[in-house]
Length: 611
Ligand code: AGP
Picture 1: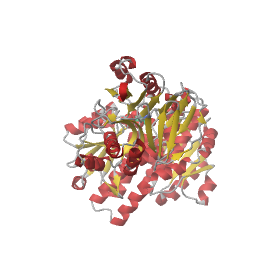
Picture 2: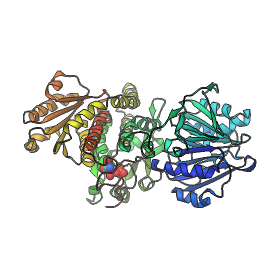
Picture 3: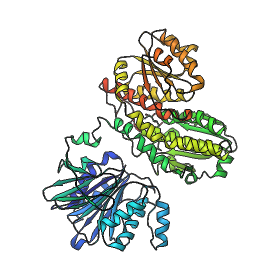
Picture 4: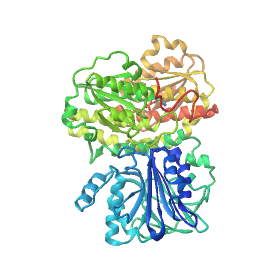
C-alpha cells in the first residue's frame, strides 16, 4: 500500500521526506513524489514514475526542492495506471491545496461528477485527485483547513490517510485519517507525519497515533489533534521500542504474519470495489448482466495458490451459478492446444500479474478468440493489460513470498463472479441473492474472528513441527482449501505434505500413513461430513495424529481428532475463506519452529516471470 511522509521543522524538508520514503520502500510502490513549501509558501511539486531513484535524480537528491515544510508519497496503484500523472502529490488547479493519500475513496466517481458540475477539471484517473479537489472545494468556501478536511470526511466513503498543505498556512502540515494508519512524531522544534514508523524512527521514537475519524495539525515542534467535527482532543504519546526492521513489519515478526492479519481489511477493500447497496456490480470489468448471461462455461487458469483459487471456484461457481467450470494449470494449458467453446470465458488468476505461464495462457486464449478476464492484484501488470477485462483485488502489496491476503481477496472475487453469474442466469432469486451477498460482506469480520485465536494454531503447529510428512484431506471446497494448506506447509516449512480428496486415500496413498503422521482434516461440507469423518477414522486407526478444522461441534469430531481448530460458519461455498486461516497459521508456526526464513523461503521467488 502507499507510503506517506510529512515534515515541518528547521531542516530542509526534502532530505527528511526522501529519506522517509526510502524507509517505506518495503511497502511496494510504482511511483513517488513530494511537495515542499518554499519561499512565501509557494509549493513545488515533483513526481516520478518507477523507483525512488527516478525522483532522487529529478531533484538532485532533494537539492532542487527548497523549503522546511512538505509532504511525500510512494504510490501503490489502485485507481489508474502507474504513471507520473497519477503519482502523488495531487493538487487543486491553483495549488491552494496539495495532498497525498493512502487508501481507497469508494465513492470517488460520484464525487468527481459533482465536482465536474461545479467546474472542476481533472488531470488524472485517481480517487486521490478527487479527494484533493473536494477538500479544495470546501477550503475555498471556508478558508479553514480543518473545516475543509472535516467536510471531506463527512462526504468521502472508504479508507484514507491524507496529508495536506494549504495556501496561507505556511510551515503547517494537516492530516486526516480513516482506516489507513497515520502517526505523528515530535522532536525538538520539528514535527513528522508518516503512514508507518520506519519513516521517522531516525528522528524520534515518541509518536502519537492519529485515531480513526481524527485530524491533526502539525507545526514546528508541536501537534494538535481533533475529532471529525474539529473539536480539540488530547492524545497520549507512545514510545516505540521497535527496531527499524521490525517497524517495517508494523511490529509483526514476519511480513507473512502481518499479511495474514491484513486479510480482513484486504477482503473488505476488495469487496467494497464491486459490492454496492447490497448488489454485485462487475461492470467495471466489462461484465454487464447481458455479458454474464452469454457465458456458457468457464475455464480458470493459474499457478500455485492462484490455481487453488480456481479449484475453489470450480466447486463454488458450479454450485451457485450452475455453469460448467474447469480449472487448468497455466503451465499445462499453454501447451496442450486447448479446446475452447463458443462463449467460453477464460479467467486467469494471478497476484503479480506477471507469472510467465499465466501470461502465456492469456495470450493462448486470446489467440483462439476466447473472451478473457483476469483477476490481478497489481494495477497495470502485464496480465492486467493483456486480458480483455480485469477485476483488481485490493490486497495491497504482498511482500512475503507465500501468498495469503492476495489468495483471500482472489477468493471473494470469484465468489462475486459466481453470484453475479447465478443472478444473471436466473439461478438466484431475490432472497438467495441477497443472502449470498450479505454472507460475502460478512466474511471480513468472520476472518477477523478466526484470527482472534492464533494460539491454538500455534500449539498444533509446534506439536507437529517435527513431522517428516503430512496429509491434508477434505471433500469438495474443503479439498480445495487443503490444496492451499498443503502448499503453504511445503513452501515455507519444507515439510513434505500432500492434499488429498478424502475419498481418494483408499486408492493407494493410505499406505503412506505411519504412526504419528499428522493428518489435517477440513470439515465444513455437511453432505459429506460423515464420509470424511470415516476417512479420518481410517487414518487414525493406522496411527495418524489428527487435526480437524471445522465449524461443526459434533462430538464425533472431538472424539476422533487429537486437536480441533474451530472456525466461524459461513455459506459452505465460501468455507475456504475461513478454513485457510488456521492452515496459513499452522504453516507459519511450523516454519518459525524450524527456524526458517518465513518471508523468503529457499528456491522461491514472489513472482515466477520465467518458465
Ligand atoms: C503461493 O504462496 C506461491 N507464492 C505461488 O504458488 C504463487 O501463488 C504462484 O507463483 C502464482 O503467482 P501469481 O499469483 O503472482 O501468478
